Amino acid sequence: MEFQDKVLKCIDCGSDFIFTAGEQLFFHDKQFKNEPKRCRACKAKRVAVLGATPAGGPPRYAKVETQATCSGCGKQTTVPFRPTQGRPVFCRECFQSRRSAASA
Ligand SMILES: [Zn+2]
Ligand SMILES: [Zn+2]
Image (cartoon, rainbow, N blue to C red; front, side):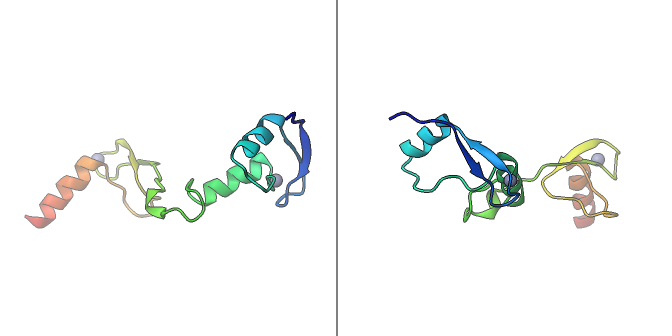
């Protein structure tokens, strides 16, 4: 079966986008009945909002890595959550030394 590029309209932003022959072949292979409803940009936006997990997937797999500066030693670190404005952020070492200091 031959596929040809098709122009579809995005239901989110209303702009035209190309449903390429390759994508149609992929959809055909997967036996997807519905054509894509959103352009690439809107799809990417939705994925970002949903935390990159497929709809209905467990949210605990949504991993957020945020670049932050440690309030203890000033080192650049990544934290697995979005730091709240004004709240101190600690790197692994500072976090652990603070925790052991608190429990001692
Ligand atoms: Zn769109
Ligand atoms: Zn630190």
